[in-house]
Image (cartoon, rainbow, N blue to C red; front, side, top):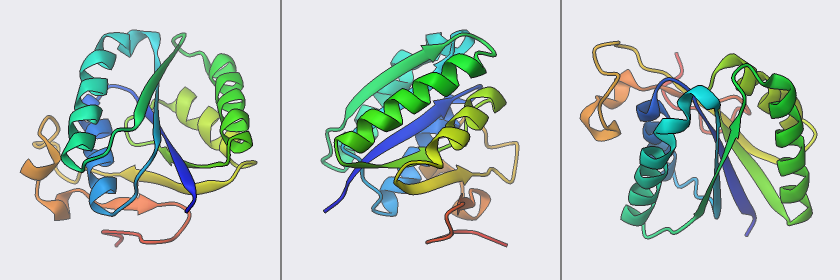
Length: 161
């Protein structure tokens, strides 16, 4: 069985990050490790996001290690280096990477996608929200047809239209 490390990007919406993680668990996409990258301006959201990821994981009887990384605002050069270092380390340890870009800001998303292309990747996902009246709610309180998810690697696309 291949080990998966889940890398997610925290931007303006903690709910987007947590809800996408929850959705992936319902699709049996499990990770032994979880990494949350964010910019300095969103640092204050990290404790509640980590707690939420741990709580959702616990509901599935999972206990992944959750690590965080804060880069400077607009720090795409730093992010680029940090992603390369992390992906290199994970590959050496026998992991495939899963990347969630849903909540990420452009600088982090671009750096993550550019770096991950040279490593073993399990999935790259984005989950949309079709109605802006639902932004700050848990996954289970938003109709599933309002939350399409796209795996850009092409397998198991859900909600594609």
